Amino acid sequence: MEQQKLVIIGNGMATSRLLDELLSRGASSYQITVFGEEPGGAYNRIQLSPLLAGETDRKSIQLKTTAWYKSHAITLHSGDAVVQIDRAQRRVISQNGRVCDYDQLILATGSRPASIEAANQSLPGIYDFRTEQDVEQIIAQSACSRDALVVGGGLLGLEAAHALAKKGLKVTLIHRGDWLMNRQLDPLAGELLRAELATRGIRFVLGDEISHFEGERVLQAAVLKSGTRLNAQLAVIATGITPNSTLARAAGLDCGRGLQVDDLLRSSDTAISALGECIEHRGRTFGLVAPIWEQARLLADRLVRGLATPYRDAPVPTKLKVSGINLFSAGEYLDAPDLDSLTFSDPHSGVYRKLLLRNNRLVGAVLYGDAQDGQWYFELMQRQADLSDLKPALLFGRPPCTDDNPSVPATLAIQEIAV
Image 1 (cartoon, rainbow, N blue to C red):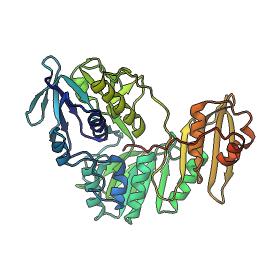
Image 2 (cartoon, one colour; image 1 turned 135 degrees about the vertical axis):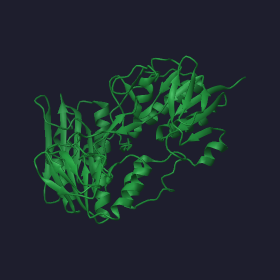
Image 3 (cartoon, rainbow, N blue to C red; image 1 turned 180 degrees about the vertical axis):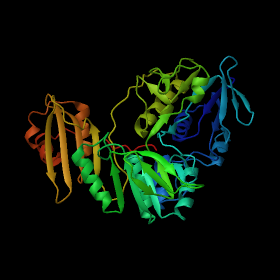
Image 4 (cartoon, helix red, strand yellow; image 1 turned 45 degrees about the horizontal axis):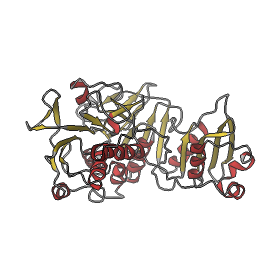
């Protein structure tokens, strides 16, 4: 039987996982070719923050060496991005002029860093925080810098700020929200997080944004919209990600915020599928590992085994990867008129718990300082069971509650962001 030509555009974590899933199913019917924009094999973007902090090295974050692709009969064109998809001829054309035919095409082009509206961003010393090359440049610049700015008070920005503070820089984090992680935490938990990180040498400017950067030939300062001027020789923009659907749009595929796919992860062209951060499924985009792993599993099942199992998005908890900080957030996190809010706060020990219920069913949890019961709360959220009997003791966590209801398991793991 003649092999079908399977071409994958993108060589990040989503592709790495998809290749594992394909090979585990015995994808002998496919001749697989992978194009990657970055040089070398796939690596773990989740570990870029520890790499910046000096807590790990490049070898440790490698997922697949170039030798791995060869040993599995996969053709890898690294450092050679695809620049055109010819849907009529079913072929792709790369930056270096390679032409590759396909029977099935997979887009796993990931995401691009979200931009900010600030003038003079082309000054040397201003970096995104998305790739190994970004980290290398930030490390090199940090060696000759004293003052650093980090823009963005979400997961990525906090991890970058912590990493730079560990290197001994004077770090100021600028966040336009009124509290940190304002898409996962309520104001009280956000303030506890800010206070803890402040003890680690990070200064915070909240509710403000950068108007413009200053410098004659290199970065010297940033001026905020409030008029405050902050000295800086290094700035890291970490305000989130946006789906990288440029190639898909140019090919005439249906796109919204990302490349739109159906429940089988097919684009508007049935010969082209997609997964990961570049896609939009039922109005949602993705930046966490867990849903992308599920997409890889289902896509491999369809391509190799012919199984048409629809993808269904599921909620995923959030965890901050900063040592010594225990934080958990899942589901809804802000008070609302139709929600019952159960809270416990012990400022002296830095412990805060907030549970949100609708019709006696758990729909949200925010834990700070003691997050050991997060997995159990998340399981309760997924089960959507009536918690009327457990409600009086629910804030005390799993041990007392499961004495009365031992059938409730705690089996689900917290997922981390895929930077």
